[in-house]
Amino acid sequence: MTLILQGRRFGFGPQEIRQLPLIRETRGILAQIKAQIEAADRQLTRLRRRTDGIEAAITESQSLRDTAPGRS
Image (cartoon, rainbow, N blue to C red; front, side, top):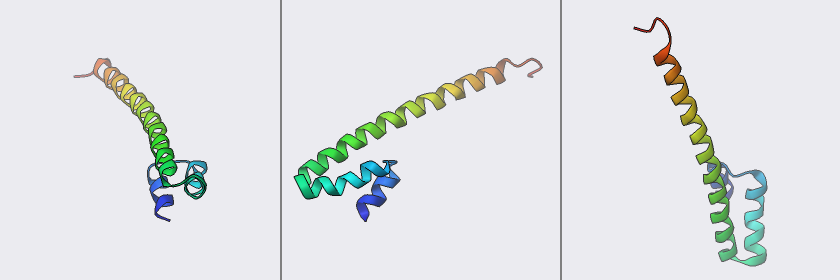
């Protein structure tokens, strides 16, 4: 149960969450840990891309606001 809650909190998809206990059962805890690290790396990449997009949108919005006509 803890594994499911952690996976959801960190944004892992249902498929990734479902596979982790199966990996442990069939290949052992070290394989599960490796799979968790790989899933975390994928999630970090997704989050960094989203963060980059958000930062670009903030910069663009700030620029539009700062250069708007009639701005005092």
